[in-house]
Amino acid sequence: MTEAFRVCSTCRTPIAYGAKYFRCSVSTCNQKRTALYFCSVPCWDAHVPDARHRDAWAEEVVAPSGPSPETPAVRKIVGAKPAETAAAAPSAEDDADILVVVSRFKKYVADRSGMNTSAGVMPLLSKHLRALADRAIREAEANGRKTVLDRDVEEAVRRFGRAP
Ligand SMILES: [Zn+2]
Ligand SMILES: [Zn+2]
Image (tube, rainbow, N blue to C red):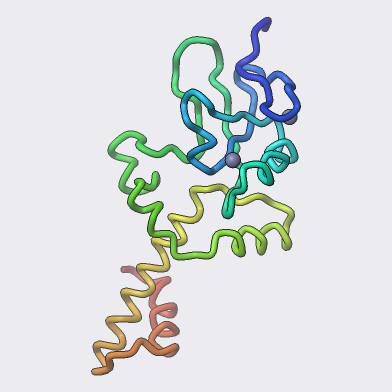
């Protein structure tokens, strides 16, 4: 392998074809012409103060296997195959509807496990929160209330594990 896929935007280490690398979750760091590539999470970390991101995280990506133009294997792909789009890959619209405090969620996971959290987790969590909220709303309605109470959420959680 003579040619590398890219070099790390921070430390200039070559990223080989087929190797794992990290990219920034922030879209401006992934614009086609100015995209950033990182060999490691610390290298990604290093660009965050300069970029002044508020909520950002590193995404693990696998570089294409060779120089041929193919789509890189990304865990979370926006605008994937239509069949998958609805279920897994969040659309831009879903992205705007993140209901969790991303930085706190990521901190919780990191504090407990030292793990990173992939960007694809947030839309999924938000989807579950919406489903939970919808159930809680129906509970409140069924009880003739115009306020969703904690007990509605508890009831929604109880039913959440069962068939929808
Ligand atoms: Zn690096
Ligand atoms: Zn960035």
